[in-house]
Image (cartoon, rainbow, N blue to C red; front, side):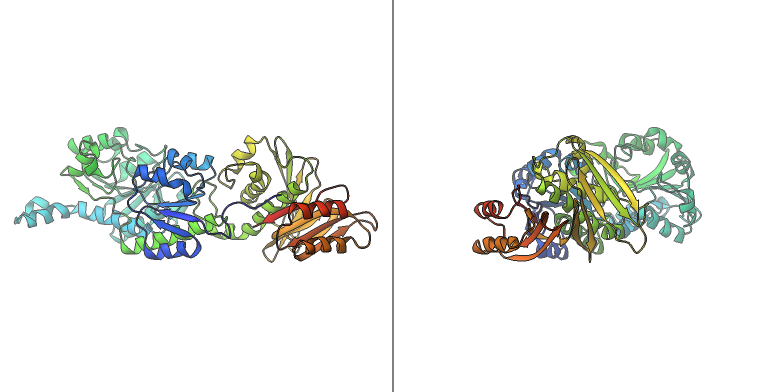
Length: 543
């Protein structure tokens, strides 16, 4: 018997150990059970995580390999924000745990904070304010510099970087940028010159960072890179701590290479819990404006992030593909919506094939052919392939299989996957077929967004792949279907829909029965002995 997995159609259990707005919680609670526990420390999280299907964190919770391994039921980790450096992505991917984030909800807030820090730094506003509160009037001590006609170098020209550039241009600044994934043409289209990292650093009177913290960006701005900056330049970091080598930054501020720094994030946070760290020394430095990671701390951003991450977790926990999935190939939301029905078909067809298999249902070192009949030959099939691998291997895997780990799980099982593309006309159906070595090919299509099986080997069928299916082969002769209906009726199993396919009268026929409940073992044995032709009936449950 083959049954579904995951919590699609069922209520999962979601843990929220950090603050999330009521609007976001309401979205989660409409679909799942939610536990909010703001008292959990690292040990408490490790102790409790084993019973949860999903976890939503902000930047304060470390989701380590140990936590992920303790999360025996964990399927989704949501990060309410952009950066995911507090989540062990390789460990999550190994276990098929989907990691989703909320990359757009706090973009404007982060951009505004970066610009606010730059403005405050250029005019010594925090120090001047503190002076006033001490009863002083020290105008000559706090002479600043203008932003107009200065050059701002944006390091990382993604969503937030572009919003900063837009605002800086409004202040009369010239903007240049560095981003290895942005072409010169794309930058020129918004009035920004894209250049190499060292050139961008050398050009800027002000430099602002908007990069994720990755192995490739950790300590990206070391002593050598800081030395490439203009003497007396100023730097803003409202992205992630660890992108700047803090020892090198402290030295550059001390020796006058840099006139100032405005920092919203540090390598060691909270800084007050690391009093002897370089992070704390930077926060206390007179040439530094420091804020406690406030980039996303606006009422509007908190609302938007909560909505975005809650919707993503609900989609992912329901078995769908969230557009903000981090540890998988990036796809636009419109592409995901278009591919999802065929991906579901690709997952169900191999489960059908395995259910009909007389040998072991576990696949090891098998050859599998996936054939796509497509109108657009350039279409991305990674999602379809991943769902097919899930259908092939999930029953024999203790680890959930999805687009995150499908390829690695196929390799681990020695699965030889071959993909073929067949071009079809714009008015033709887009079929998918799955062929496991030595087994009949299973073919299907989507109709009204729902998966249908259209061919099982040489048998032409047409049945929606949903609910519970009973499948068997019988000898084509009068009364067979009536006998099967009688046996199922006696067991109180209702037939909801059906299809019978045959090649020639009197020969073998393929029977697919949609039923409302799973027949017990005795009923299946009676079906085998009464109507089946040299085989046992198979049952597949599609949730």
